[in-house]
Every structure is written in structure tokens, then in C-alpha cells.
Image (cartoon, rainbow, N blue to C red; front, side, top):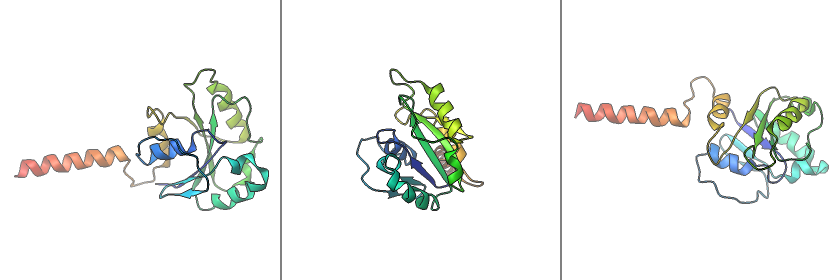
Length: 165
């Protein structure tokens, strides 16, 4: 599985998405520092909100296979400059969150991510699981099994073992 670094404003859903990708129960907690997991690097929102910390994001991007720019569909503006993706020599994807919230405008969020330079854009809802499968499929490398494929394979083994008894 490709390692993804999640970047976005505080409250955009980076930690919630991290929990969903790891198959954990969704609970809110504020990310205070960069958290590195097997396939996710979760960054605090202040790193993108504060220009002085932007260099740290560029350095951490080298530890990832791709970067995910998160943007809530409820945002009144985008923090991402036009063609910001050119600053990182990794694939950069756009991830739209909170598209189901009142006043959300996912089409505008998509346009802002396109202007930032994202070619692949996903709309996700970690609470319902919407869009998580498509994102997993994008992170999948040849030979990887997605979490639900692993589960299905286990069920098949268990069924075959029971038949042999």
C-alpha cells in the first residue's frame, strides 16, 4: 500500500480520515504533531495554516509516496495556491471532506483542488465510508489486498477448512 501524507486546515478531517483508513472507531482528537503510521502521515492543520511551517511539510512529503490535500466542502476559500502541487515531487491528490454538511459546495472545492494542480480528486465521508473504497483502490499497489479483500480471503479459508473437517 502506498504511504499517503494528509495535509489540510485544522478541522478538515485529516485525523478522522486517518482513523477510517486504519479501520479504527472514529473519535475526535486534535493532532498536535506529525503522526507517522504504516501507510498514513497525519499532519497538524497549523503546518499548512502557518507559512513558516510549510517547509516541514515539504520535508515530510519525501517520506510519503503521495500527498493528499484535504479540503472541506464547507470552506469559504482555499488555502492552496494555484499549482502548489509543483512544489512536491510526489503525486498529489485532492480529497474533499464534509460534502454532506449544510452549506457544502463540493463542486467549488473540486475546482479549487484542480486549480491547485490535483489530477485525481476523491470525495470521502469517513463516518459513512463513502469514497473510502475508491481512495483505498488508488493507494493500492500491485499484489496488495484491500482490507475487505483480506477479510473475504479469510472467510474463504475458514469455509474451506470447515469443509475439510
